Amino acid sequence: MQKILVLSDTHSFLDPRLEEHLEYCDQFWHGGDWGSVAVADTLASYGKPVMGVYGNIDDRTIRNMYPKIERFTCEKVTVAMTHIAGAPSSYKPDALETFSKGIPNIFICGHSHILQVKRDLNRRNMLFLNPGAAGQHGFHSEQTALRFKIDGARIYDMEVIQMPRIKVKLGKGDVFPPM
Image 1: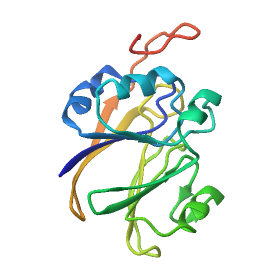
Image 2: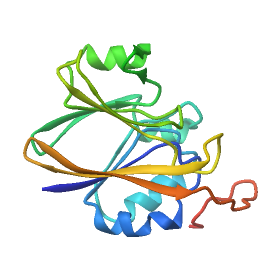
Image 3: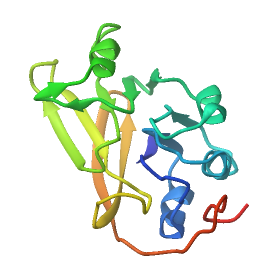
Image 4: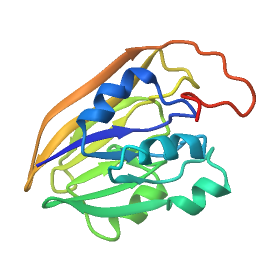
């Protein structure tokens, strides 16, 4: 059994209110727009697997660390992710490229800052996940992430992590938490 934390759109801000979830989970999956290597390094410092893709705001360093499209298996579940995917009603080219390699059990994206958990009945009941935005940058009024469990082929105990948006003043080049 694996406990998964799914984040996206951190934009250089790893909220300290996620600490208990970082401790609890076995794997971290990031749907892009990391914003800085410090966020990736902080997640990696927990000594747990970190899977992710780069987003449209990510620099060359992040793009060298993470691909545009990622596919992997967790337990008996096939997972695919890309940053800009659209939604089940109107997928974007990167999502369609991802599906051309096979329909996953779970598909993860970010970009919109809009939390979505849906079944795509047109794609073998694929679970579509957009964790919203865990960072501060953007129009969202609440910072969000997802947490769930995978045991064999079973995906269960899906939880939305909701955090009222807080403001932390960052200077140029600063990240939170500081490294």
